[in-house]
Image 1 (cartoon, rainbow, N blue to C red):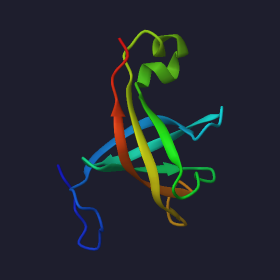
Image 2 (cartoon, rainbow, N blue to C red):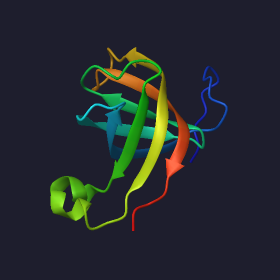
Image 3 (cartoon, rainbow, N blue to C red):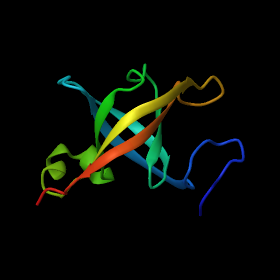
Length: 114
């Protein structure tokens, strides 16, 4: 199912798909978790409960499998899906369970690990 809002500035249709992702911004050692709410062929939308990265920040994003979140050892046994993306917008979400919404545009994809 694809969703498109008439007031939306995206060039491509959104595909609703929730997933937990981990992202690292720039050269920071710290990586953080967020929830991906939807994606398109050009980017994705995340929701966070902590201050988002700066506008223009480049992120390395890993899509985590549910069992990898529950058992960290599983994470190293499965291939990862990773993306490079740039923060193109962010906003406060006063009427949501999350505090911030963040829009990302893909820069390139990273081949899966074997």
